[in-house]
Amino acid sequence: MSASSFGSEAAAPPHRWTRIAERGSLWGLRFTAWLLRAAGRGPTLVLVTGIVGYFFLTDRAGRHASAAYLRRVYATAAGREALGRAPTTWDSFLHYRAFALSIVDRLSIWFGKTEDFELEIHGFEPFDRLAEQKRGAIVLGAHLGSFDVMRMLAERHHTVVNVLMFTANAPHINQILRELSPAVDTHVISVDPDSVESVFEVRRCLARGEHVAILADRIEPGDRRRRGRVPFLGGEVELPQAPFLLASLLGCPVLLVLALRRGAQRYQVFTELLAEKVQLPRGGREEAVRELLTSYAARLEHHCQRAPYEWFNFFDYWGDGGGGTQTGRAESAPRDRVRT
Image 1 (cartoon, rainbow, N blue to C red):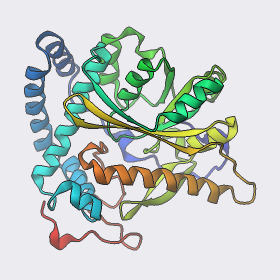
Image 2: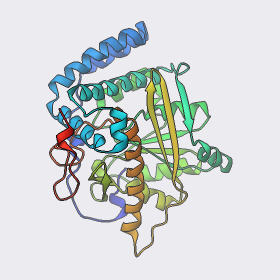
Image 3: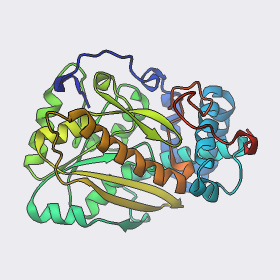
Image 4: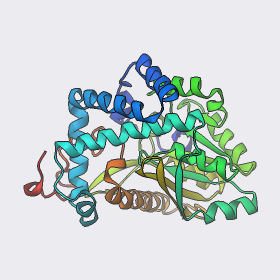
């Protein structure tokens, strides 16, 4: 979501994830999609396990990022309970494999094979209330669990969810999804950092009583001028202010929705109301936005601690070189208990 239209001219480089080339060939993705359609999930999962093993062995930076993240999770009481032991290289492999499984589920959803998915829904009441009022909301997600399950959930409840997204970093997977489902772009609002047209499209969607979903855990190219630093898993990270600035501009509620994988084609979906209406006072605008970002990050932390392998940010998320700490900013993870 572009934030350049909301103020601040302070320049800063975008997060490194936007410069990470999409790994894997278009042919490989097409073959995986073909195998899923022709042979089903069993053979596809075998293939995907082999593929993820290759990428795990060849992606040194990603392995280090995974290990740093898992150390941070293990440094919390809930994270230690979820992991069961100090994270090892095997846990990082399981982390990679969880991402691969989410891709298989994503392909299944875009194939329209959704009848076998089991959804355990927690807190759907805000959507029911908004439907009665014929109002739309900004729906925040993250690279935590499956964002595509939200699409399936919306279809089951006859709700329209439009996705505001930056697509330039992953052209291969997006091309595959278009081939699987020609209607994939029907409810996608593509972000152009140099244009405010997406803001007007969001306004039109909300006016129709539709929702607009945003992955709010990464700094997009257009967000680099408006960001906030907040606590997250023992350190501090930068998150985009734009989703909350947009909600303030349009006067709509802000919801958090996360779908976490709990088994084969089984997800728990959590919906939480982050703000009924975002109001940013002139005198304390920055602090009010930071409080909202802190609340969002705290909920991500809560779910990461309980589903640690579902976090899919395989890069130096804390900007500390992948070491798992930020000197002078965060408490160190208990390294004496950690093996990698």
